[in-house]
Length: 211
Image 1 (cartoon, rainbow, N blue to C red):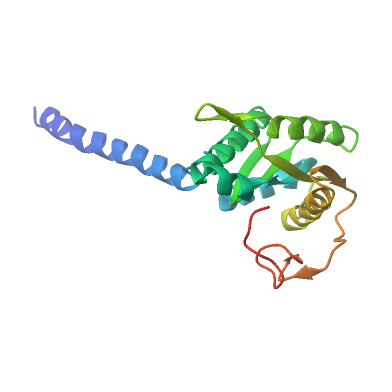
Image 2: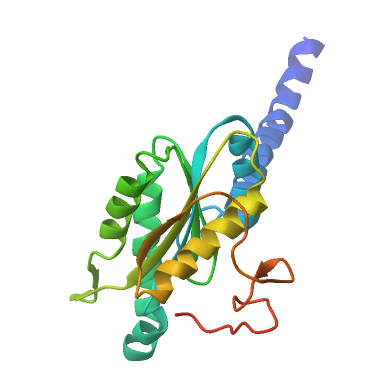
């Protein structure tokens, strides 16, 4: 009898701890995701990307939206948020079966995709076409451009080096008016300031304005 009473008394406590554990895990997961797009944050992406790149060949991709500031200026920040949500949906769909996507900050995103040197250009062409498709905002069809840079890696590559090279490729695409560009090799081609390409936000010559 006493054992039964003790078990019944312990049941609410056990249930309370179980609920607390579920809520705690959900809060941790929410903190690892961008609240606007639902994509992982930079920190969460880097942890998973390093693990993935340690064992698999892949394409590391950096994306920067074109015309984002002009869209904000013309239609307001809510329209800019709609553009970011649209981008997030496209990227989430692209990595649904295999891959990683993240919002790095502002209008900059990153991907890790299964790709080889043979098919990466086809993949970038398809991805760019999806990103620049119009999206609905309060009954109007709006769109932004996208500059995409990619580099194909081998297993064991350093994530920071791959992101830097993909960022350079993205910059090359942006300099020609948008589109996509694939880098060959991981050796940096442009000057570095504080570990980033010269001219990017966070460097001595960078600006915080979105393109």
